[in-house]
Structures are given as C-alpha cells and as structure tokens.
Image 1 (cartoon, rainbow, N blue to C red):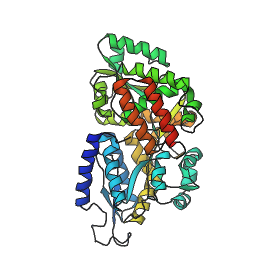
Image 2 (tube, helix red, strand yellow):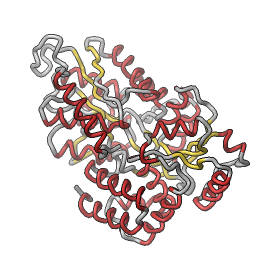
Image 3 (tube, helix red, strand yellow):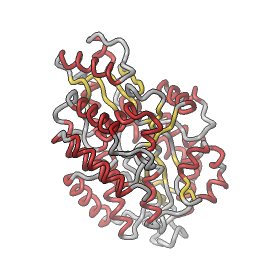
Image 4 (cartoon, rainbow, N blue to C red):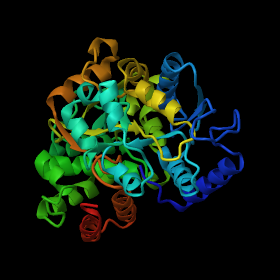
Length: 425
C-alpha cells in the first residue's frame, strides 16, 4: 500500500511532527532510554486503527498481555490512507533514529529497503528458539529469508485476489453465480451497467494496482505472472498489452470518482447496494462483519483459477529499539499458535502456521485455509510480497496516470521502465 498522493504526504508530515513533539518513544516510564534496561513499555507501530484490523490488533494485544504481563503495550497506530500515513511517519522516525519498539511491515520484498538501510535486526536465532522454522511452511520461510537471515515474524496470510459481491444486487439482476472467466465477467458487468448499477466499485492508488494484478494473473497465468517480478517474463510482451487493454475495459465499469475513494468507501458502495462487485483482499470479510453487513459473497477473481495471491503482515525488531526484550516477547506472541488465532479470527486472514485448526475460524477463513493448502501461491506488488517499496511507488504513479488518460502504450512503457530500474534490487 503506497503513499504517493501529495495530500496524504502533507497530512502524514503533520502527524509525524505531532508524534515527534509528543515524545512517542517507549522509555517514558522511567526515562532510562538505555536499550531496554529499565523501560517496560513496548510501542507497537501499525496502521490498524479501525474495523476488523483494529479488532484483530485488540485480540493480539490481549494475548500479549497474557504472555508478556511484565510489559506494557503502547499503541502506536497511525490511521488513514490504508497504511500510507503510517509509512510516512515511520520513515521520518527511522531517519531521526527514533524507532518504535516494533513496526508492521509487509513480508517479502518490501522488507529489502529496511534491510539494505540497516534498520532492522536479524531474527534467525529467535526462529530456532521459538520453533518458527518448522511451524511456518517452508515456502514462506524461504520467501522471508534474505541472505540467509530472517528479519520478520508474520502474523498472518492474506489473500488479495478475492471478488466480493452484494448477494441481493446479484440476485435482483438475475446473476445466480459469479463468472469464472474474464469474458463471462464482462457479460455480467454489461448486465449490471444496463440496469444503472455501478458494476465494479473501485478506489484509488493501491486498490487499482490490485485490480490490475488480478487481470494480469487471468491473462498471463500463474507462472508468467510470477515471472514479471523475477525478470523471467517480459513486461513489454503482447500478453501484458492484452492485460492492460482488459484492465482499461474494466475501468469503464467502475465508479467515476474512483481516484478520490479509499477502499472502505468503495466497500460501502457494495454494502449500500449501489455497486455489485469489488476486488479487494480478504480483510474485507472481517471489516464487513464488524460493520454488521452479512449479505455478501466471495470468489476468486474471474480467470485467476487456482492462484492464491498472498501477502502477510509481519513485525520486526528495529535497530535502536528502546525495549528489545519486550519487542522479542511481542514477536514471540505474534508467531505463536495462540497469538495467531487471537489475531486472525478477527482480522479475516488466516494463520501463517501449519498447525491451524480450521474449525476454530469463521466460514471465509475455513475456505481460505483449504485453498492455501492446495493453490498456487503468487505474490502481490502493492502489498510488498513481490516488489520493493520503490517499485511499488513507480507502479502506483503509472497507474494513477492511466486512470486519467487511459494510455495503454504509456502505461506499458512505464511498467517496463520500473522493472528495469528495480528488478533485483
């Protein structure tokens, strides 16, 4: 989730100054600030401030208070922009050597920026001590390993390529089952558009990247899609051109104010019956449940088949954290079976651990647990599992321009340039 908009940047800068002026370091209890020798506070920095995300954090905090009663949880959440505001504030704090005790980051390639800058600690020893190397799937551990070291503890696995729908809107318009291919989907969207309903609700920035990636998976297939991020698939290829044209066609079915809406604004259009569909990650299930809306359906995006587009929220140990031992206790809770259950049953994601009891979870998570065990895992750029933050920003900028001008050749040229600049970095 990126943070390129000027308004977001200005707002976040104000928040950063307020936090810095307020002395948000975790050593306020005794003023020691001596690397954890006296402070008992653990400042946990996230963007989980509302809805299902906040409920998930609350569940994790409750388990932390049981597991680590000698420490005091300090909520460092920064709301707004689906994480963009928080990332701005975090960058400012890291630059000024005032890190929180731990912060939320997407697992995967996004962490490369923090690792390269020397801002986070190696947690390989803790993985062995806490048994995480065997508790997490080998493929996930491999994807978390950089240069033989592991730098984060994932709290969950999310799925990005989920199509949500208002069941009543579909039924009222004669749609009894959601399409499984893009051509079938276009036909259903035409039906809805003819009835004066917004077929596909969409927001700005990273939400548009998500929709585009779902189209790329449909048109390229899983292997070639993964190859886009590993330099094995050419961004200049004709199949990418086809996907861009299909994405452009999809934009014609979306709300005209898409560039001014957050994902929750688009979600509200679906809940209010003003729109039929929305492509969004599975945090939407927990958010709609938390808001009391139950009349929704979900399926993999048409044409994505057995692709499970994954991302993971993880936590790190920053260099210079005021309470490293308290942070390690938090991280141990995050990776534990009890901690992951307390968190994921409320957030809408599934545990990263393999010892999950599916029956402990609501209906959506049960289906996701089953799919994660058998489907093909593919990464997400806007959510950090596929690409670095710099690459995310370049794609976000290009897609924002495309939302306005619809220039297919221009978007493809920008994507080629971004891959050339950031691939392998």
